[in-house]
Structure formats: C-alpha cells, structure tokens
Length: 342
Image (cartoon, rainbow, N blue to C red; front, side, top):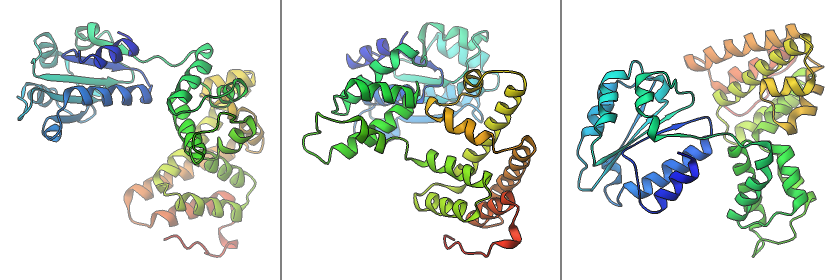
C-alpha cells in the first residue's frame, strides 16, 4: 500500500483492521494517524477508545489485550503502537492477533526500520505502508502542492529556492511553509505576488539557525555572543535538554565529516553521508575549518557530561548549559556570571 492509497480509502471511510507504517517520515505518519482518528473515533467517546503503546517498554500481551478490548459506548476503538520495531519478541501473540483481528479495533503500528524477516512483520506484509522520502525530482511539486494547501501560489523561482534550501525533508518544508503562510496571511487575501526576496527574509531564521550560530560563537571563543544566543533560546521556550541534544548532534556530524574528509570524500559525498541539509552545506564546511578534530572530541565529551548533569537534576538547567559554554570557550575564570534566566 502507498500513502496516497490509504488516504484515499480513509476519505471514503474504508479502513483495514491493522496497519504497519514504516519509514522515517514523521509528517506523513502524523497525517495518517490524524485521518485514522477522524474516521475511527467518535466525538464524546474518543478518549475512552484510544490507547497508545511504545515498543521500547510495551509487552506484546498488553497490546493484544488492549486490541481485544471492546469499545466503550462507540462502534470502534483505536490502538496505536509507536516504535513497533523495538518490541521485544512480538512473534507469537501478536502474530496470532494479526491473523484473527478483532473487528471493532483498528491497530496501527509505526516502525522506522521494521525487520521484514521476523514472523510478526511478515504477517503484516499485506497491511504495510512504507513512507518513502521525496525523490529529488518530486520536491518542487510537493512544495507547490503544500503551498497551495496553505493558500499560497508560489512562483517558480521561490519553489526552486525552497527546494534547494530545504531539501527533501517534508516536516521542515511543512514548518517553513506554515511560517510563510502565517506571515503573508496578515494581508487579506494572501498576496499573489510573493517574491523571492520576501521568502528569503523569512526562511531559516528558526531555532536550528540559532543553534548553528551558537556553535559558530563557540568555535570563535566568543563567550558574550554564545551567552546572548543561549538567552535567545531560553526566551523562545527551547528546553535546555533539546538545545544540548542539537549541539551534541552537531558535534557528531562534525566528527563524521572530519573523518570522511580524511578518507578522501568530496564535500558533496560528505554532506550525503552525514545527512546535511543543502542550505547548510556552505556554512557547515566553513565552520568545520575552524574546529580541530581534538576540539570536536572535547566538545562532544563535555556535552555528554552536561547531559548527565541535566538528567540528574542536581543543578539548574540554565546553569549547566552556561558552564558548558564557558568550558568550551576555555575561559571559565574570565567571565562574570551575568545570565538572568534562572
């Protein structure tokens, strides 16, 4: 089954008793689940007839018991199992259920990487939906379609810019188009003459941009600049743990890039290997030149240590991140404590 086939059937109210949604396309998964909920659940009883499980800590027998439970004051219930590829030994009970599902339940499983050699996933073969990434030649048409869905008829030069800038990440495309629609919706109706210059001003000014700038400041040992960006992230409501996650992810990408360059790979091959977005290609490699391999390793180690402190909960989250910045800049003793975000 394809994404569009399932959506077309759901628009007619036709459902299968089970679904397995495979792939790392969160936007498509979100839309499928939203449509399934609207078709299956009934107003007033939805919260009683929807149950969620997570494969990393769910027991197969509990999932099956939930799926076999009769709906409460409704015709059907919905059971969603996230990360089904992490369920420990799902073979027996769940295979039996898939062979004889309950008519009043729709069970939906999501899996980024389902091992189709396992009995359970083999049993789900006929109800498996794989959400494939956009191919390069599909990106412009997808952006145009999504833009029209937001009420914007984007000109060709804007579509080409967005395709080059955002790549094939559907979720990122969705977020940026939402931002553009919100900006342009202040004019009623949305102007038909949306220009490339106006789009360039709006796109890419989000939190990832701020984290990228933070790493630039750290590479230049600019403590004041790094602290200002931290305060900006706090003000935007970015959780410190997520900021740290994004920093650690960036260090990992930089380390992989350094290793790939030493192995003789070209910049475009390196970008593909580490999953770098097209719009970050030039600034990423410019920034990479400012970091030695040992500095990246040190930054990664310090970030792991900060992660342990954040999760331990013994120190204020903002303080942990500020100390990380000072440690990375190597001037802990030279900077007075000035942040006022605790």
